[in-house]
Image 1 (cartoon, rainbow, N blue to C red):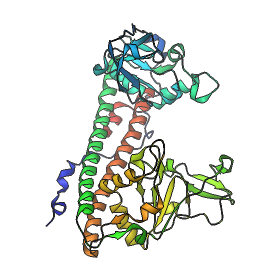
Image 2 (image 1 turned 60 degrees about the vertical axis):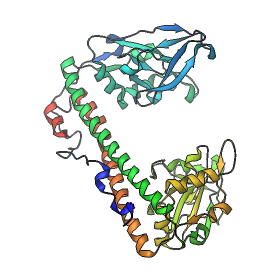
Image 3 (image 1 turned 180 degrees about the vertical axis):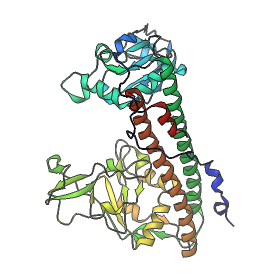
Image 4 (image 1 turned 30 degrees about the vertical axis):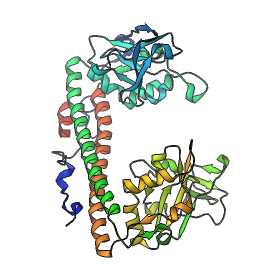
Length: 431
């Protein structure tokens, strides 16, 4: 028996399960008045410490992620290698935001491990008053409600250059509960975050097991290897089009197009923002029931060769010029190719073979058709597919659960602040 047949699903970690189902948000309103709205300027103040940039002195550089997702380390900087004469210093439990593109929600509370890091003057810092718990403010910074308020106050004429000044942030009014209520909110939201973290860990463990299986399937020597061009007689890229021909609304003249932005690095396909393009050639290749979609060219070489199994909703849709449509001989061949082509070993082969030394890499059809595909007997292919599909189902379920919890979390914070959800009701969300 081979090693891959002996791998236990225990390797995926202990599944995370909720004790009770999540009730729908907004189904109960036990309180009529929200906590009083107060300007942020009443509970925190602009507090910037500047440090001069000294040559031969090393500084730890930080950045702020969008959507309240936190602070990120950006490496070390020699004071003599920057045009800045001085930079802002971060301190634990301060609020920091990015003025540029503030409508994307780049605001958070500085964690202890980033104390002493530096940022440019594009990142003002604020010290919280005694009425505000830093952990509570951290959750507020992850609230779409705050991002919307920030977006409403940005100034500037060019979208990507719009800024939010510190004074504008401090004018934003939010419901501010007492500290003891803040503590209870933090406890509940932290519990949901812990659940999401556990689900993400479960997903990563499943992905690692799956990668080991796929690599073993494709590294096993076999005399029955076949060329991809024989298994997929038709491999073609999508057309190019002018921006004026693209619409977000389907019309009789337009063809649905699955763009590269609809394909995610995690292997999923997002159907929420499909394009509809008029004026495409009559013989434009479209997705069929035996098709796979593959990324042909990308600035990130690791994504070149990424393969996707398109759902029925996009059958008869075209793809962009950045992608291939691979038409397999039949559905069984398509399904096995979808398994094999996701192998890290074969993914590496495809990204390395892409032409172009700089910028966009490009995967050539001629090379792709000569790619050798391990082709064991039908019984072995069936066993391998069942093993990988079982892990696929586990990964999909964990990701869906994590996504649902994130939605619940956003509604929970809003409801607790507006007092449309009381604490007894919120405790039904116990995980």
